Amino acid sequence: MKITIIAGARPNFIKIAPLIKAIEKKQTEGSKISYRLVHTGQHYDKNLSDTFFEELNIPQPDANLEVKSGSQAEQTAAIMIAFEKELIQNPCDLVLVVGDVNSTMACAIVAKKSNVKVAHVEAGIRSGDMTMPEEINRIVTDSITDYFFTTSTTATDNLIEYGAEVSNIHFVGNVMIDTLYQNLNRILAPTFWDNFGLAKGNYIILTLHRPANVDEEKSLIALLQGIDKMVGDQKIVFPIHPRTKAILGENKLDLKNTILVEPQGYLNFMFLIKNSFAVITDSGGISEETTVLNIPCFTMRNNTERPETQTIGTNTLVGTSIENLEKVYAEFLLNGPRKAGIPELWDGCASERIIEILLKK
Ligand code: UDP
Image (cartoon, rainbow, N blue to C red; front, top):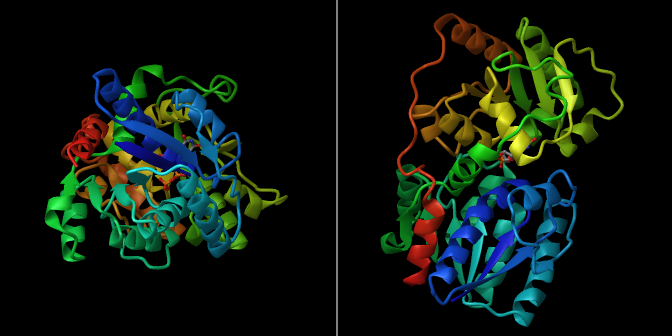
């Protein structure tokens, strides 16, 4: 079986790393399986791309489509045009896409229209929020996917509700968590750890990059200032996403507790998360990682496509207003963290399950 694996953006790189390891393990055991790795070039900064390839030992891509940034339509179209050519030159039996970025949807469409089977890892998750480009990517991708791999029974149920064939849906667990378990003994403190007097539990990690939180400059600044005031004597470490950085521009921010740093590599970032007091974020992946690491997570969104991080894990949805965050955070300081667990099958073996199942198709 020849598989073409698609990766375009930071969260994709983290998800494909254990899948490639699982394929290589099968190869050493004599299975007839090979892969070709296609990087669409959606994320191309060193900080968001190369570092992850190096740290997670992902082989250099066989092809880089180098699409770079653009509007939603420009980027999606550029990926489709380039990937169609790639697929004609390098035919395969299956295209495997992960997550919910533009590359996921664009390559799934191209594959399906070329009569190539599509496997979607992290299928079926839904926020119900059609203002998120990711939600549209999820729905379109799942509407043409042949083999669905889900992280939760909720995701499986969503797919059944949308009419997917039950025998093609496989609840396998979470490849993002495979990567976490595979690298926990390699995480390390960033070089600025001592310079800023960071120590276990004396800081909060903040990440913000979703349009609803960062696209409006004034409200972004008000939010950052509000969080800075809210935390008392905690520090805030804020690895700033290029999208957010571009919006803040040259603004002088009046922040006493917040330390602005570049987007972190995986090993430094996980060290920072694991040793933090709490996390404030609008990321989906981070709410999964904090759940497994048992770190309180406050998600600055009105919805989540990962409800198990809330019902089982450490995640609390706080909406996008600073007032509500302040209220929820004050309650948390009063009552302490709630008891949380780890969702079913988030055990580090999802990738091996996926490859095992694909080999039988
Ligand atoms: N991440 C990282 N360094 C950072 C911020 C995030 O390594 O500075 C990792 C982290 O593992 C996270 C993943 O990148 O789960 C994806 O984060 P992002 O917020 O970009 O994507 P989302 O999960 O919202 O799709």
